[in-house]
Length: 214
Image 1 (cartoon, rainbow, N blue to C red):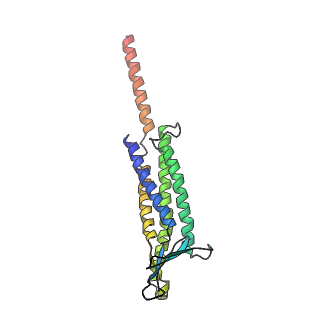
Image 2 (spheres, helix red, strand yellow; image 1 turned 45 degrees about the horizontal axis):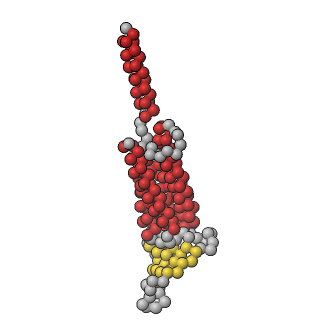
Image 3 (cartoon, rainbow, N blue to C red; image 1 turned 90 degrees about the vertical axis):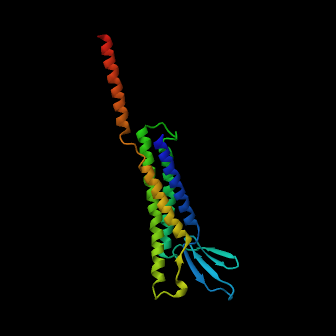
């Protein structure tokens, strides 16, 4: 029972991390730039994501444009698309495998050891999904910091870290935490323990039968 609760905690934690990764992939705040407004009283902020870029002014008007070409994106955002889509796909696969392997589910008639191995496999895929989120997030952040402190980059081209990057780092931590909990839910030698108990009971039954015959 305790191991089942342990698995549920790890599964819920990992699913929360996967949902955070989906949100980080969808929102456009990967790079944030301060733009000159059309008037002195108007301030504009540019958002650059992996799917679109947006302009948000102080008047509350938000205008977004979806990228027309993948090849026109910077290399870090191109890689971010691939890694984030891979992370989401791995998360979906991990959810299915973990559900089939947890003790509280009855998807199939499987041995306890096999179900535990499925839960651990799901946890490993959650950890792998977290690594797929960490790579593009850290790559994008490193480029932003390098350009910010590079004197050769014009001030208008300098960007700041967006909310999606911090959400992605949090997603990585939660995914790895939940996957690690699932990986630690494998019972040690559960099959051997059951066989030992069964053999011990057979031994006592045989000994009791011999005493009765005597």
